[in-house]
Image (cartoon, rainbow, N blue to C red; front, side, top):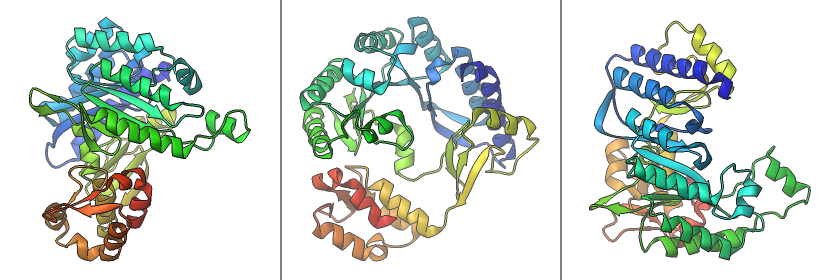
Length: 364
């Protein structure tokens, strides 16, 4: 990847410009998220180039949340300072664990001490909005180890914590190791216990605003990830770059994942028809039913907000309790979802958060 970075950045910049040129108006942007892979391997000048063209081609609001994913083992003070000066105001560190054995199993290049140093350096150069990604449900991971990871994460006083349960993907090294019996399969019951422990542990200092995400409050302001809220509210977003996904103007898009093929497609493009990109590998037109289903599935992930009756009615001109009468009644009877006291919002119960996939399947 690194040898393609300059040419790749040029292609991303060109894709953004092509998209902007095809739009009838200059569109407003309130969040930017630079992620996928390890963007912190890029030079700050590359990040600055991308952000500058976004400012030129779109109306990027002054208070925009501009996030970047980073591996703690790839940053330095000078690099973080340059990222900050380029306009990044939120860093998401892919920590995963504070246990050496976990990090080795996951093939991470950083150590626990490097995580602590990376957080300290980010603070020194002015970052006041940090997220730490953690993972649980690993093979041979003990709940005591998980508790220690949570404690070490809290000690660093991040503004946001994201927790993800391990999912074994076909074709991955870890899945092969499990299938061949070289390491034990993850224990789903133990993973559920780990999630419950995290809920009770983090709720003392954070708002649990989404199934996998907790936000702290600073100066009277809760610091949810505004970019991800766009997804969970099923609102429009652009996706630029290899493998990027977007959803805008009634279509869902996925760009080709191969970097070399992505570069070639963008180079050959002379123009495009909004909202399509020459890099699109798939384009799916959203029909109303699919959009309503996605709104239910994504909205129920929001543990406090849930799915608003009024928002659903305003968007679709229909009542969700009529459209999904049988599914809602069934899930309520199973103790997985509930109406708030005013019956204005539908939310997951505590049990529903543990069995979220069972809930979401009702709206597929």
